[in-house]
Image 1 (cartoon, rainbow, N blue to C red):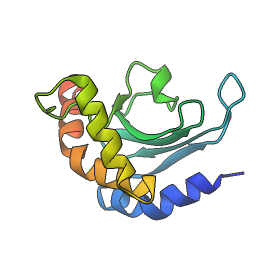
Image 2 (cartoon, helix red, strand yellow):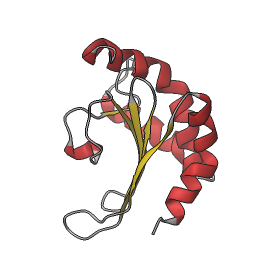
Image 3 (cartoon, rainbow, N blue to C red):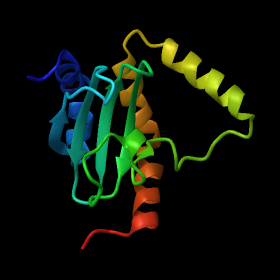
Amino acid sequence: MTSDFVADVESKIGPLLEKMGFAVDEIDDSPDKGGLERNIVYYRSCDCKLQVYYYRREGEINCMIAPLDASNEFGLDSKKWYFISHFSKRPDIPPKERLKLAIAEMQSYDNKLDWLRDRITKHYEAAHAGILEKYGSPE
């Protein structure tokens, strides 16, 4: 059974990802090792993967990117999955300040998935280029 989260991701973020050449690859609604809720939607394009997830343990909704050969596994437990903002140029401010700004930005949205959709739009180009540079283009 798929969760409301998956349906919400498909309605809020799915259209953007489809325009970018992504299609749903897999849905994982299995709980984590401790039994807490975790929902992941994996997407695949011709040269990389994305995952959009909700992780109850951390209360986090986010997106990660990986090369095509990465396993569909929860990104926080994997070495090939990177946060969508990982390859973007960061402001020249201390990490704690960046975190405060990111939290304030997210809290300015009524719906966290709207925030995540805008985050993907903002960081995808750098993330895509970074993944291809790090792992090469698939053959």
